[in-house]
Amino acid sequence: MVTFEKVKTLKGEVEVPADKSITHRSFILSAMACGESVVKNPLMSRDTKATMAALKACGVQFEEIEDGFKVISKGYEHFNEPFDIINCENSGTTARLLTGLFSPMRKYFVLTGDNSLKKRPMGRVTEPLSKMGAVIFGRNNNKNLPITILPSEMRGIKIESTVKSAQVKSAIILAGLQIDGETVYVERVKTRNHTEVMLKYYGVDLEIDNDEIKVPGKQILKPSIVEVPGDFSSAAFFIGAALMFENSEILIKNVGLNPTRTGFIQVLKDLGADISITVRDDSFEVRGDIFVRHSGLKGGKVEGEIIPNIIDEIPLLGVLGLFCENPLEIRDAEELRVKESDRINSIVHNLNVVGAKIEEYNDGFKVYPIKNVNDGGVLKSFDDHRIAMINILLAKRFGNFLIDSIESIDVSFPDFIERFELLEV
Ligand SMILES: O=C(O)C1=C[C@@H](OP(=O)(O)O)[C@@H](O)[C@H](O)C1
Ligand SMILES: C=C(OP(=O)(O)O)C(=O)O
Image: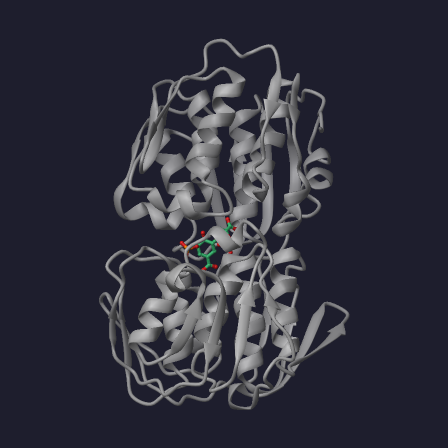
C-alpha cells in the first residue's frame, strides 16, 4: 500500500521522459536499416527495453553513447533467428509491431508477454498478416500470445482496418515494405502516424492518399540520426494536474506535438481550459512547449473521430470530469477495454472509491461533478501504469486514499513521483 500527502498547488517547469511510441519505432527502424543509426534521448522503460532486447536477440547491436544508443545492423534481410522465446513483457506496441516485422523473415520466432499482455488481442494483427500469406499460430485460435511465426511467402494486398489501432497499421506497414508487391492499408479513422512520418525520415517511399497508405515492397531503409521528443501522453498527467490542483501553472518543455497525438489539448480547450503551445522544431517529429494554467471546465460529450487521438488520455479525462461544472461523457472508446487493464472498468472503480457518481457504458462512461469526497479508501492500479499515475494524482489531490501498488509506472514514466514533487508548492 502507498500513501501520499495532500497537495494544494503546482507551479514551475518540468520535462517529461521521451516518447514511448517514437522510441519503439526508432529502435525498430534503425534495426531495419543497414548500417549505423543513432537514437538520442530514447525512453528507457520496461516497454522499450523489451523492444530493444528482442532486436538484440536478432543480432542487432545497441552500443550505449552519452545521449542514447548507436544501433548497428546488417538490415532486416539479415536478422538472426533468435535462440530463445522473445518476451514482450507488458508492451502491446512491442508485440504487435514485432509480429509485423518478423512475419516475412522466413525464420522461426516465438513471442510471449506478461499476464496482462497474454490477455490482450493479437488476432487484430495475426489475421491481416495471415491474409498476406504469413504463417502464425497462437494460443486461443491464434488470438493470444504466445504466438509462433513460421517461414512463409508473403505478398502485398489491400487490407481494410477493422480496429482503430496504430499498432495494427504499423504491423502491416512493417511487413509490407519487406515483401513483393504493393501493400495498401485502408484506415477509416486516423490513428497516430509516427510509423509513416518516421519511415519517410528513414528514406522509405510511402504514399498517403486520403485514407489509403500505399507501401511499395522490397524497400531499403537508410541509417538515420533521430532525437526522441518528450512523450505527450506523459505530459498529459501534468496538463491534467494543473487543471485539478487550484492556482496551478505548469510549463512542460520539449514535448512531442505530432497532431495525431495532441487531441487532448483540443478537447480541454473546448471544455474551457487555458492551455497554450509553442512549437520549437519541426524537423523530425514536431516538438515544443506546453503551458497550462488552472481553469474551470464546462463538461460535455467527447466521441467520434477524436477518440483514437486521445485514447491513452481518456482515463485522465475521466478524472477531470470530477472538476467540470456539468457531467462529462466519453463514447466510442471501446478500445480502452483491451489496454494494460480494462481502463473503463479501472476508472469507474477508482472514481467510485473517491465518491463520484459515474455511469459505465460498453464504449465509455459519464462522470458527474464530485460533490462529497469519501473519507478514504483503497484505489486499485490493476497493474496498469496510466491508472497508477491517475491514482497518484487522486491521492495527492484528495489526501486519505491508499493505493494498492504503483510499480507499473516503470512501463512509461519511472520517475513520475520525483518530477511531480518538484512542482509542489
Ligand atoms: O502505436 C503505438 O505506439 C500505440 C498505439 C495505441 O494503441 P492501439 O494501436 O492499440 O490503439 C496506444 O494506446 C499505445 O499506447 C501506443
Ligand atoms: C496502451 C499502452 O501501451 P501498449 O499498447 O504498448 O502496451 C499505453 O502505453 O497506454
